[in-house]
Length: 516
Image (tube, rainbow, N blue to C red; front, side, top):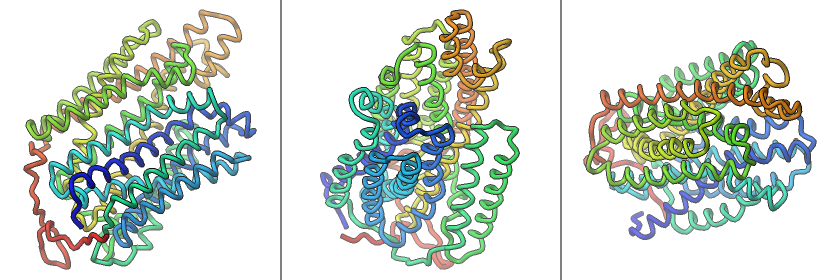
């Protein structure tokens, strides 16, 4: 179904609104955890599950969700997921026990696992022209990224003025607006080639991603020497290996492994994972720096992320103008170089640096994200046909999510190891548990020297972690300069050969149908 220009861009606005809701939900919970611990009598394990339940459901179900959307209708599943997300948000807002909240978070993760890939997968149906598709993808990616720094701001303000359930209740009107807009404006699309659902593939991918993600979450909590966590990681990796072997043998695979044979998908996805790795690391540490070193509350911490948002908006505006003129290689190389510079500056932060220095490098970081994220995603998305856009989008998102989860575990370990090393004689409980516990203990003692050492140790750990991210982004800039073919969105071939039933046909004659 063809839609006029106004209808298409309004539909994109609805999809971006839905992604903003998911981005908010990822980080808004973090500011509410102390309140939840008191009101719901939640212990440390329950607090970890409030976040972990969402992440695990998201990781386990993203790949099956993309394939189901391809077969039965992407709009249909997207609408159902929006409604489930709204209902789950209500359940979380009025949860009376920790168990009820965990169950609600699982439902939120299930809905998000459908919303993320399918809201992305309908873009080829809405925007068949490559240049328009890249512009639309930039808006979609920016909306998703904006929700994360907005979460602490919105959550901090809500907690200051309302009860903790409001951080979930805010999702409901946003979801209703998004669902109505998707219903009215987004065309239905599905694959006309009605492949059977790969049930063994669904089970292997779901359990494998579940094991890998849970294992790295536990490693992040318990350290790299935890044997049960590594056993879980190994089991997940083995199941994912079995999944890949099965996908090569089955007649109706859940994902198209042939996508990795195309340089655009392979490198676009890999570079997207690096960005997620660095982004999750920044969100893991900078809010702690604001609160433990600068001494601000949760709302103040969120507000201090506004320069990041400003940089992200500027970068995303620049990328729309730069890509048609400079091409993918130049934009990606410069985007990653800017990320490396920003993270390197962040690694030079000291206890006495002050907020102005942090505002500078987070602004540059946002601009780098705005340049690199949509460009890398567009490079990968450019290799997807409308026929398998749901499963292809799910594969990109699942790998990005796994990269972010592993990134938090790896970077968290780098930070905590350096923090404990820099504590010196203070490396004992409860100070060694983390900077928040250390600052609380120092203030209870009323010892400014201990407080300064704890803060300095944390800044040292943050520096080590940011240097790791900076080096990864610098290497990615080199990779982009060397291996990426410099193509502009308008020059992307409209016809990409695709193998169907042993014969080659052009991608613009896709069997995907659009209904509505």
